[in-house]
Image (cartoon, rainbow, N blue to C red):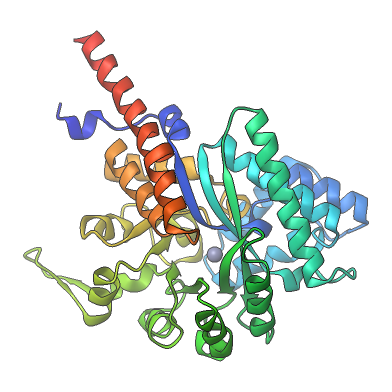
Length: 376
Ligand SMILES: [Zn+2]
């Protein structure tokens, strides 16, 4: 056996390996049991199931329908139970705890403050409740022996008209737990250029943002996000594959936009399982991440919505390891890519890479070598 395939990590090593997550939605990652409890406490009667296991299954099935619009419907339920500061704090704390238990050492978790105002919270109260929850979750994780740092990304909905207000909110809380800004929601009919004032404002403030683009919609959406809006990262960006041409003899030619994305090291927040559910890719083996990794794009691995996709960072990597034969080196490459692309300051990113990520992988690789020697 070659070292390439023997260094394939098993599920337990994948879980222990340090991982970095840049694209995860707070309202897409609730524990089913928490949704049931919050619904009961708040008197919300719209849940399709009240047994946590059945509810978890329902979310995955609804999200499996193959259309982004249908997928987004599932969020009506999670947002319905996230309308008080107490609920937001609880869900944010559990999010940090769950990610830490899965071996995530750094995460940027996003949510749209404007979707949590139905019972009278202000935008500021929403942000403060979520921040408190993340800090609480970090503390509980540390007590359980896991170190994690969680930053928030504030999302504006692309069909709404509050993006400038949310961008200003993100800027106001930038040193208080908010790492950046994002826009999300149905791509078709709602181009990111509708929100130019928000992006221009953030650029003038030297702040960071990512844009959901190139998921349901193709190259024009990616092009607008980069060249009109100035996005630092692409939320998904998976359709960049449409600008990469593989001829029958295996020769690969990048179009102008794909070249630009690779040359400028634009991070792609790839979410394999989510893409299969929304139809942005047809199978793991055909998922563009395989080719994008080979071509050295700045590819990262993400969960998107852990509840709707029944996934976690470890599960995403398990799929990739079994589909593409990825090794610990590949996992480290994706993880360092993600850490380099985070919205925290450069020196802090570097410290995470040198003090947490590299030593973590070195330890796993040493264990593997020790085991090989012992067997031999
Ligand atoms: Zn997303």
